[in-house]
Image: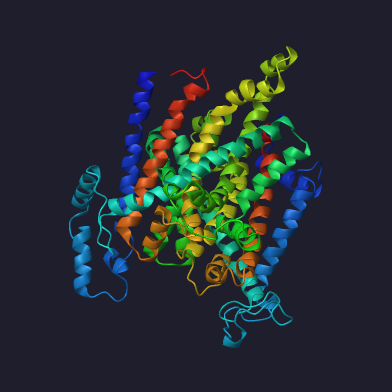
Length: 294
Length: 313
């Protein structure tokens, strides 16, 4: 593919290609991944309908029970139904993943457009971004959540801040390579306003790589939420998230490992599917990378 | 060359200054009274005042910053709000388990990942390649602590080969150390191996397509020499870079792994500090690990000339 198609055409091409697989990479892998992710999304949306029990109701008589007809995956230390909790946990995890991806892409896009176009701002912005990248994201996240108190938005902000520099770098590199193109120079010469140039002429070029980046951010956000909740610095413990279920299961690990394995399996399947879809999107949108990575 | 080294070292200063400003503002710009957050709901006004004074929260912002940086430059990282001991000595007591585990993990990861990546590139588009790629996608997708618990379940509880948790220093006997360190190291290594193997494969694939590789093969150089001397050395720069940037992942992993395996290192120290809202400790840990990250990447940057003689500054 020599010529670079318009972003809209690329998207059409992307979904067209997924529908018509050729080769291993675009073959079974992405389709299975899409199916698994689709099931998890459906489970999250219809969680109240498909949970046989209330995920919060405790039952002292049914503590740490094994799988049975009433309790599909058994119960936890408070007698709550594990299956209902795992299904409900998908809601929070997906919300945090999508939320973090959306917020970091949006903020990173704004900063990256400005940084790539205005040389003066660039020097300052990139120094700040380099510094932000030096701070280990898990540590920054646990510090932020520790200060702001456990909540879904604290977690989203904590995940977003370390991701922003990566988005900025990506957007900036695209803008730097496009800003010398004749059509951008023509727009400047014709006196288009600066926001218009940034938004109408430069921004569309960043969409394809940003879609790929967003999938990776989504996957890593879901993973980070689980780690934060596991460490006790995540979403409030009353809300059943995959991380919280596993954190509570830690103490009973030797007694009942399924309290960690079921949410862990769901989490891993979810992230694996998102990563696989992200890899597929990257291969389709960037033929140069595909050649290099095979 | 010397000029480049000096410029590269000087470039570290603005990065660390911005990190310091950021860490400083993190506490001060939090909505609400940081002293109240630190003290918790049950604090008396006297306790709040004590925390405010000990953190210098009553001074103007710029004065606070200058005092804080002044102390930092003297190696003074503050005092724990819980145990009232200097943070530096707390970190000093617990750095060794983390250091030993981290070094063992990095060595293990490179020894496993680089041959994996080379094999995948060499046997491109065969089952070996797909297996390595599948492993690397899996490694990114399973949370560190789940891997840790799977290892404990299999090797400690089912097979009973290794102790479940805990830590012994190498001075207490090599086997005592290794038998407890090997599972945490493998746990930590999984994601690191995935990262390095992926980059090694990509970098090797690019190099193996070069003309001089074809020339070397044509003149009959042994395949392992082509792979490891001609190709790997030229593919080394991106691999070194990813080892450096992946260090941030390792730090995050250490925090989790030490909790899973009950290792008394600085990762556990951080988690305990977070649960107790011991802010000076958290602040010190962020500063320290950021500095370490910047330092490691500086060393790697400077080592490029060694791996790739074409790079001259």
